[in-house]
Amino acid sequence: MSNPAPISTDAVIIGAGPVGLFQVFELGLLDLKAEVIDSLPQVGGQCSELYPEKPIYDIPAYPVIGAQELIDNLMAQIAPFNAGFHLGQQVERFEKREDGRFTVVTSKGTEFDAGVVIIAGGLGSFLPRKLKAKGLDALSDGQVHYKVTDRERFRGKKLLVLGGGDSALDWTMDLVDIAEHIHLVHRRAEYRGAPASVAKVKALAEAGKVSEHQGLVMQVLSEDGQLKGLEIMDLERNKTVVEGDTALVFWGLSPDLGPIADWGLALEKKQIEVDTEKFQTSIEGVFAIGDINTYPGKKKLILSGFHEAALAAFAAQKAIYPDKRQFLQYTTTSPIMHKRLGVE
Image 1 (cartoon, helix red, strand yellow):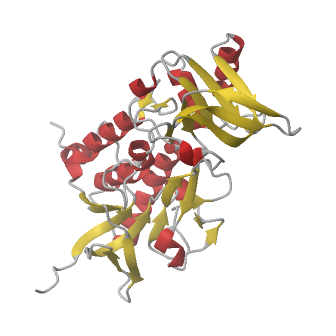
Image 2 (spheres, one colour):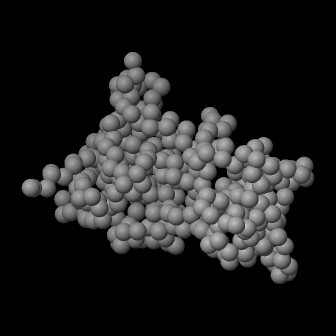
Image 3 (cartoon, one colour):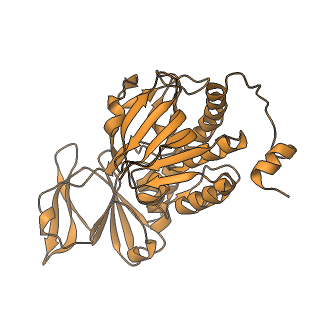
């Protein structure tokens, strides 16, 4: 049997997280076709894989929106552009040809002939940083969690929330009203989350709804396979026991660029260097947006990635059709935009 012909497209987007999905939208407004590749079995990236129920507070026009709801809305928004999705596969071969276009081949043998490549891989292939402590192996399954997919399973629990970043603080605030009590354990007194979230958690602690603990987890305490608590050691090497029956660990992600690291792109600390005009990498025609890129002043926010996607789309159009005049048209008034969006 002969191999199927390569899929010809304007752009291959690597990564189907929120920024990759919005890139489909921005390309579609410019009448550019996109094919999206992701190693996960579903779209949504970290939002769907790690914290689908996590509330997000900094998306414009949404005082609060769930992570999965954001992904669902983005999928509805890009529906008019009929992007192709190739999930559960990773890019294994990447080559810029003499004609300036790109050959991209995935682990499932899907081959693309693309005008540009846009990397929106978030942190690359990612896994949550795991709890490692004496006594962990004695626990039965289902007592240590690294993501929340069903918040109701934590109702009435004595929760041990480990971490000091946004995820730990956000879930502390979200679960405080359904948990029996929350013990928030961080290695130091200062949190790494948004100042407003820190203030809210401090207020919950003052109200007695949250107990704060500083120290490193030294041992997991259990009885007949059931979690009873954690032994922690503070900076003065004092050891204390924090009681709880369920642990939520939010120590961030361990990033791995995977094959992307071998593409010859300029990197800085496992992130791809880009300019701030086009968000183009060191290889012409290859762009990087979202958490995977770095530049002076970079802020790892979803809304920053949306901005990067808009500028990358115009740069992609110029790279594919260098002689075509570019016009900035507004979706509120442009008949062309309305036609592309399917607006009556």
